[in-house]
Image 1 (cartoon, one colour):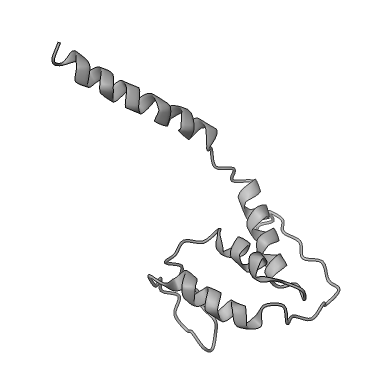
Image 2 (cartoon, rainbow, N blue to C red):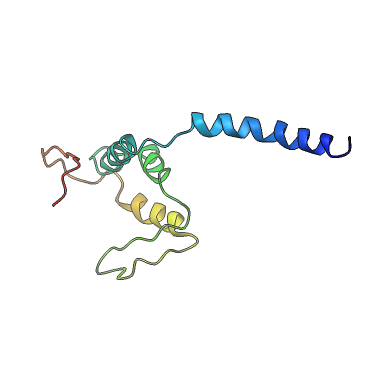
Length: 109
């Protein structure tokens, strides 16, 4: 009886996790499209702070980035997302409309 109750408890806790894992499968086809759409919205002439937040939602807090010549390394930083938010907020909404359409495809060069 003592072994039966812990086993039952473990099974009852594990079953909901299995169901949630199946519901939250990662879509490898849609993710780059969604990220690219969010990224291009940030670079539009009338971009707003919520566009920036939607773009940053795809990234981890410790992102690394490179912006030559100002940042020549791409090391991760614990506050990388916060630094990117600060830098991108400065330029938010000041881009000119080039009239060109951005496209993403899966072509390998």
